[in-house]
Every structure is written in C-alpha cells, then in structure tokens.
Image (cartoon, rainbow, N blue to C red; front, side):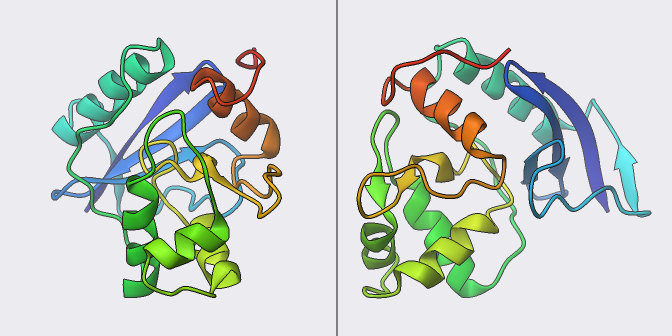
Amino acid sequence: MRYYDTYDSPIGGMLLAATDDGLSGVYFDRQKHHPGKGRDWKRDPANPHLKRARAQLAEYFSGKRRKFDLALDPAGTEFQKAVWRAISGVPFGQTITYGELARRAGVAGSARAAGAATGRNPIGIVVPCHRIMGSDGSLTGYAGGLAKKRALLALEGVLSGELLA
C-alpha cells in the first residue's frame, strides 16, 4: 500500500508518498517522472511518515532546517540507490558536479549515468538533487524545472535570488 498527501510549498504544489516503511516520494506538480497516484494509493494525511515530511519541509522552507531526519523507502535499482545515498551526503548550501557525484557513488567516470539516476530521484529536496551541478558549475537539468532548482539553491544561499511565488 502507498499512502499520499499533498503539500503546498512556497515554490509549488507537491505530492508526498509513503509506504509503511518510510517516505517514498516527494514530487512537484507536473515534474518530469511524476508517477501520478496509482489505484492502490490511499490519501492519508495522518500517516506518520507524511506528517513528519510535511513538518520538516515547512521547517526547511522557513529556513529552520538544514538536514532532514526521515525514514526513507525509495524504489529504484541498486545503482540509483547508491547515487541517491551519495546525493544525501551533500550538505545544505553546498554543491558538487555530476562527475564528483559519480565518484562518491563508487562509479568514477560515469557522470552521465549518475545524472540519469539523479533525474529519477523520487524524493526531491529531502534527497537534495538540486545541489548537483554541471561540470562548469551550470544549473543543468532538474526534474522539477530549473526555476525551482534556482529557488532551492537561493534558499540555501548558494545563489542570489528569491523563492518563486
């Protein structure tokens, strides 16, 4: 069974998903690779994983949280999970390149593959794929859109700017 609820962030609506074991999805509305709600999904705002996720996302967006403390249960291949674990190690307010991400995930020289796994990250923001940059420091791809990536990096003090309305 998958449980879901919505969250209205300062930069757009989000779908939150969880299993019995933890948070399994944080998706911006209309983002790339958005799974949509399946028939076996049940709306449950009282689900403890979803409640904690909403509370911690609110703290993050208000500037009071720099690191998430949530049980996670993302679905993916072992390679994708290795990349997502490496992404989780990038601290608030810092960025790394896809090449460095590949190295940290144990697949040095596989920046493109690490980038593809990053794009499939089902737990955006919590697993902070917005902190991964192109080799020249450019804001390359983000499933939620580059404007959202810019806003998240601005929130973390990496870029100047403001959150989107």
